[in-house]
Image (tube, rainbow, N blue to C red):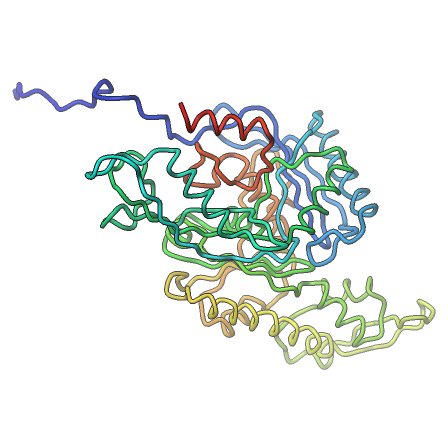
Length: 436
């Protein structure tokens, strides 16, 4: 029998390190997905085993929103109040604040490199929470531009003197800390309008989260986020793109084309009411032709004529109206990804999600235009959540829940810039913490 002592981990060799295990939040919390065509609210809690449980939910037709931005406060307020109120009644709670998605204000993705000199001996000193917070604060200051406001400041990696590709440098020694930061900023006026709308609904903003990032959190598997994948969230008013690599969000983009544009094209091309154009798209829409399309005749009411006066159009006409708009959207996505210069990192995987991605034939068309493997991403089931919320249209709402459950970032225990609207008390706490 070997009597050699085993090497054991002790905890009294120095100052105690802060607990960096990802904490589970307590109590109930709510998320709100505000889209052009749909508003969804989910209220949840985290069970004792660490799993999410949905307590209440609802979704309504989007009103007062266009291209992801608030354009009519009264209509948007009515829709949000009705949606949140129904979810609150189901959960038997009243929300004071929500985590809300970010699609307004033409979000822009920028990369900044920040250098931070550590005061101390020549051989360096350990990196602290204060150093990380100062680096991120510097990134926010660099990103400030007239009429724009940073919402996310996310570290992609760090370099310590001559050591690069460091994910979390805290506790490591160096004299110079370099950080590569991904900043997402938006129009300040659109952000103020979003805040004003939620204030009218008696709701505060707990955090603002990039919509395509949330969609990626709910639809990508761990390996896809690690080796590199791109999420294309095809909504009603916009198409949002998020590229992931090494478990980090490295790029986002927004294209102001969505499913409503397809509906509008059908309404104009067939001279039919918008409601019927939407029905045609849902029931008979496709982006690929079939031999039967010329023979399949569809009844189409004309604008301004009696409902019983129906024209007959071949299904091929519907397909030929839909396909060019979808091709335009995918080509713009392709150009955006090429312009980002990150094709080497985003891998060979494209995940389509969002309500507008459900057109038959779209994955095959996307694969041909984008030149990558394509699949449709659906959020996983969560305890207590109705099955309808596991469809692609609710990927962003479900991803917001994942973010709310503290799955949203590496430096969750610092919380230096997760999109929240920090008040004076939080700023005071950070000031004291940095100097104690």
